[in-house]
Amino acid sequence: MRAQEAVPEEQRAGWFELFFDLVFVVTVSVLARDLHGDPGAKQFGTFLVLFFPAWWAWANLTVTINVFGSDDPRSQALLLGTMPALGLMAAAAPDGLGDRAWAYALGAAWVRLGFFGIWFGRAREPGSPVPVWRPVLYCLAPAALWAVSAAVPNPGRFVLWFAAVALEVVLLVVRAGLSEEFYARLATEHLVERIGLFVVIVLGESVFTVVVTLADHFTGPSGLAALLGFVVVAELAMIFFVWGTTEAARGLLRAQAGGSSRAIRDTVLYLPFVLVSGITVIAAALGTAVAEPGHALPPGSRWALCGGILAFYSANAAISLRYGDPGRTVLAWYLPCLLFTVVGLVPASVFLPAWAAVGCAAAVVFALAKLAKHHRAARQRAAGGETGAA
Image (cartoon, rainbow, N blue to C red; front, top):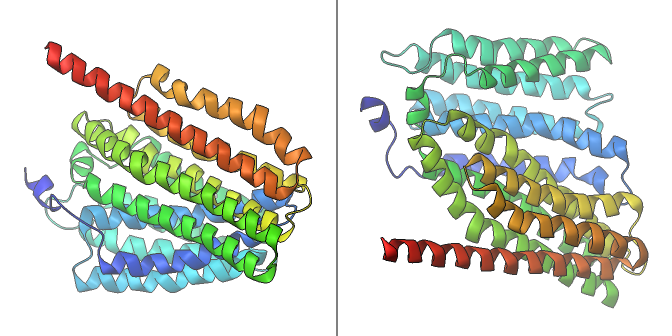
């Protein structure tokens, strides 16, 4: 099939994509600043509102390169031209819903114009799986809404932001202009690798937060909190990379073979946002614990620690279900996650000093990792037994 030959079977992330990711290191770091200490609903809401457009830009970049590649000079020039736009969004983020909202909006419009140039050019090529009108609606129209919003005062500006994002989401939901041939072009190993690299960025921000905070509060209790925080991050990384990426590769291949474009869309574009957001707020809570290890975590950090762990596992559970895993299998490890977090970690974060609360978080994540390993081994033994019986 010609469409499938357009993308190499073993497509991997190149230097260009890795260089592009450097911008997101800054973006995640800046957006996470206000989550330290005792963030409230406003700080959490601001983070989610400003982080999603940046994540969406990264997800669109990944799909663009996955389907069309980035070897030709024109595409490279356009993608390089979008990097300063992401930098502008990151620089505007500290007051992205206030005095710098206009700059954030212009950065978002700029990014979409770059993607429009790539998609429109490829849509005009003979045999393209994308109609010409698709990038006009998906890229150019939202870019116009973002650009116009820069000149509109609050709260009207945010109505236009919502309309721009809603237009893109709706076009993906109804799958307008995206045929089965388009989804057949996707290189699943590249998608898994790219999501894994983005998770590495967020985990790296977590380690950076813990170490830098320890450098500023170089005491024994802070060192203990930092060590336990590192265990939390390491266990989350192990869960994701040892089991998560393997399951994702299997699930994406199965979804692609079965023509389940919605499962691919949800597990590549939407659900990883919940996962990386969870890791980001966990990192902020760990930084707070290292700074003040002898005091109980403030309410905002308790929400960040407990809610972040639930978000991480909830995203993984939703991804497993979208890939067709049996609900009984998913609940076998997700229900203990709810139990350990609500019954164990939440009270611990209220009554124990911060370093001990982080220790409880490390114990919860460690126990869940062992439980997942046990269930995985049991499924493999059951599958082996069925194969032998056959």
